Length: 554
Image (cartoon, rainbow, N blue to C red; front, top):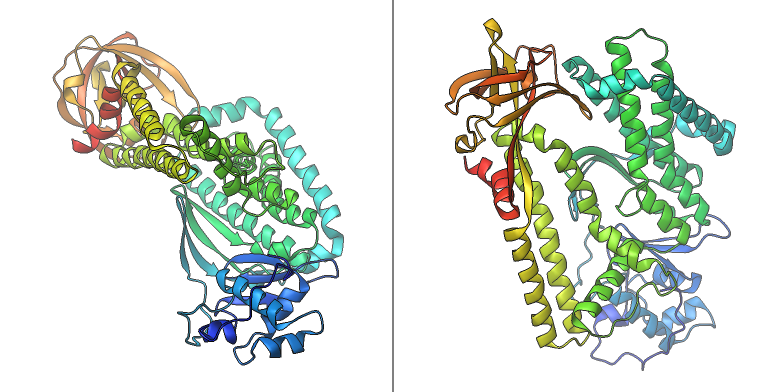
């Protein structure tokens, strides 16, 4: 919607309502003039930005509910006629820029809600307007300029990577062993602060170019706490590269902070301070790299969308991918949404599978930890698995519905759906996967080694002679410290130190557990650690039930 040059229909009839004959802007719509000579006119509707031509923007600004079509045409100049105004008005009513027929009241402009749900799994809570936080940042940015600041940041980020390489053995030790609660608490607090600075950097660069960041706050992103900053006003900027810099400013800031922490880790001797700095630096580099992924609504995607100057790139690419799948399975004719991008379909497929890329590896890495925490961890695993299942079912239903709309025959849709369902059932029944159970161990007085399992583990799955691997685990890596077999299948109610279930040391907290005597073939080198039972291979359906659903029921 950039001009009013489409063929005009006949003048509005006498049956047209006031919303057509005397149009006015909707309550949540604002017309923004260009912020520079080469920038576009923007009509903002809520949090959506529509680029329009100057003529259409001036029409929207002049429509105050008191002028008819002829009056508006006379006000806007000789390029306009009453018929052209009528055409443009009807377009803007459909686009919800002007009030519709049911919107007859003149309520006050609606404020953006403080709490907002963004599908598929993001909840945002606005806390502050970032313009209040930028009064001390913008003068410093103007003093050196973005290029000089970028050069300084690049040196710090590169130096931090060199420091992590020099401290490689120390970093591997930090990631592969339990750490004290104080280190975890310090790293978590520093990560939250770095996340806030990450978002503030987006706002600062946008404001540097003349834009207006609208809101900043906290959110749950795929069940993970984080900060956010709304920089949608970047669509008002005149050049694509400016919007790219706004999108990448947060990642650059996060890498600079991580690099500074890594360089600082060179100074202190081995101990908690160095452990915390190394863990924080590694987490910062990893989070920044993850943010570059263009297949999720993160900074990398915003940068790609801004570079290509294609709003809603991800949604359009996923639509093309669904259409390709629907055409292969069901037939039908589809209009491509992104005909100029040859890679639109594979990019859309990657975007559709992005939750699997994120959630499945996370479940694989943290399943053992969640299993050891008992019922709370089991509930979290069920929620994650249920969410993935819902995504798959929703995608299948949506693809079939689009195929029907595109003219695919009902019989072919039914036949393909039946074949896909049969293939899924066969996979559940006949594909066998290894089954493991996570727990912990401790060495009791007298040297007796005891296996510790949370209450969510099925006692009937534990048999004498079952192999048990004993190991020391950190947040990422683990090291085998011993091997054993279960000596008796009878459990005794006991308590387990927290360090047997989570990678944490220096705490006296205990948890209820079931204890099983172990016969060690290789005694463990440490008195407390983690354990894993290998229960053989089971059908996929049984494995899913035992791993995710059964622990909740127990």
